[in-house]
Each structure stands twice: as structure tokens, then as C-alpha cells.
Image (cartoon, protein in one colour):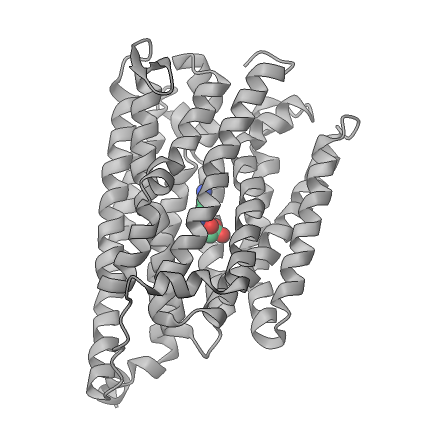
Length: 411
Ligand SMILES: NCCCC[C@H](N)C(=O)NCC(=O)O
């Protein structure tokens, strides 16, 4: 009996849910670290004299290597060529080095030191901001690559079964990471005498635990491979560089990539600046300011798997994405109208944003394997993330600059 269960890994329901849990925990730690500094903006300004542009620049660092050095696309190709196990370990390693640099910059560098350099003209920057941004840029390479790796793993284990629900669960874990990143860093920093670096250290320890859970996945995935090899079902179709061009020729791929760019560029920067928005526009007192933005990931925790399971049963992915996009327009119109300034309006808008932020990802990610073959999936997800990263990097920079230029309150 035991032997039968062991041999039939591919059909074991519990095996695939354990794989999902292990990989999702790794991702959750990455998501925590991505936004760990978001609630600490006030402390960065108070203790290190960062301004909005510094904060915007730091956040834009997220895309520097992924976009300009094409690291994300290479990550996708490595994934398709060398497999999810190798790519996952590499990604976590890169994340740890990047976050280590950021920890050093925030915890040990002199905040008043500046550096002069040339980049489209003479520039002077705070050395601490530059080092933290470079660390963040490196971290983001590993983090984005683990994102596409996780998607490919879930597709491998769940294709033909409850795929959208599983991808939705994976996103839900990620959102839990974002929620913890909004809720925990400030209390942790305060508990350690206003130490901005301690929450980063806490995140690094979490990521090491996430690495251990990834190792559990590796063991199970190896067994699945040997089972498939015994049954003569080994995945022998290999990715070739020219497959990129066949991905480019699929029109639906471009629609998804474009929606991904516009949608995520609107939502993720909101997470970074949301605390500021509820304080300054909706007049919410400082200590409660993290609560309203944290409703966003909490709602998506339940809704993303729910919408995913609806998608598994009924389809209609395109309609779900269209509805999500329309809701987003409504929400930002509400944020932009000056007389909509009651805290209750902020709560309602964030809840609607949460519904939109569940609808679109729960339909978008499982739509990709419907149009792209599995051996090109890593590269296809990477290309979509690459397009998306332009927005993730550019919009925070734009917001920081706009706040410094037109913000009515001092930074
Ligand atoms: N700060 C999180 C950025 C996540 C970017 C990533 N490329 C992604 O889109 N992941 C899927 C998701 O829905 O978060």
C-alpha cells in the first residue's frame, strides 16, 4: 500500500497540496521582504532624512536589473532550460545576497554620506539610498524569478486538475506576506528602539525558513521525475532560444502582458504609498494608518482562491479580467476626487480594490498555460513579468517625484 502511494506521487492529492504549501511559503517570505520598508517610510524620513524622491528611487530599484539587464528574462530561460529546482535554489540565494546588502545599507551606513557620479549628467545621491536600492535591485531578480518558478511548479503539479484554484492559493500566500509586511515592521522597529534594520533582519530569517520549505518541494519533485521516467513520461521537449519568437507571435500573450503592466503598475505602488495617502488625504491618525491599506491583502487572501475555483469550474477568464480592470478605474477615480476624503470612503475603496486585485490575478495567471506550451512557460511568464516590471519600477519613481513637486504637506 505504502509502495503504491509512494509510486503514484503524480496522482496523490496530498502530495500536490504539500508541494503547493512548501513553495507558497517560500514565496510568502519573499513578498514580506519586498514590502518590508513600506510602513517604515516615516522612520526613514525622520531618522535618515530620506525624502519622497529617495523613497521613490529606492522602490524603483526593484526593476533596475530585471528590466535593464534583462535578468528576469534570463531567469525565465534558465527555468525552462535547467528546471524549477535549480532555479528556485538560485533565486533564494540571490534574494538573500540582495537583502543582505539592503540590511547593511540601512543598518550600518552613514545616512549623511553622499556620492557623486555621472548618469545622464552629474548626480549626487545619498550613499545609503544608492546601496539600499542596489541591494533591492538584486533581491528583486531572485524574487521575480521565484515568482515565475512557483507558477511553473504549480502548473506542473496541477495542470488538468484544480489549476486556477491552486494558483489562487499561491497568490493568497503571497498576499499574506504583503499583509504581514504592512502590519509587522513598524511594531518590530519600535520594539527595538526605532531600528529600521531589525524588520529586514527578521525577514531574512523568515526567508531562510522559506528556503527549507523549498528543499522539501525539491525532494518531492525529484520523486515525481523518477516516477515519470519509470512510466516513460519524462518531459523531453526542451526550450530553445527561438521559442521566444513563437511566444511573441501569440496575440493573446500581448493582451495579457499589457493588462499585467497597467493593472499591477496601479496596484503595487499603491501598497507602497497607501499609508501616506490615508494619513494625508483621508486624515487617519498615524497609528491607525496601516490598518486601512492592510484590508487590501486580507480581502485577497480569501477572494483569489475563490475566484480561481470559479474560473476552474466556469471559465470566463476574459470577463473576470475586464471587470477587475473596470473596478480599478472606479477606485482610482475615488482616490483622486478631492472631496472624497472621509476615512469610510477609503475603507470602501480599498475593499473594492481588493476585489479587483483578486479577480484579475485569479484569471490572468491560469490563462497563460492555456496559450503557451509547458516547456516555454517559464520564459512566457518571465516576459510578462518583464513588461510588468517597467510599471513597477517607473510608477513609484513618478509618484515620489510628483509628491515632492506638488505635495501640499512637507515630506
Ligand atoms: N511587490 C510584488 C510584486 C509582484 C510582482 C510579480 N511579478 C507578480 O506579479 N506576482 C504575482 C502577483 O499577483 O503578485
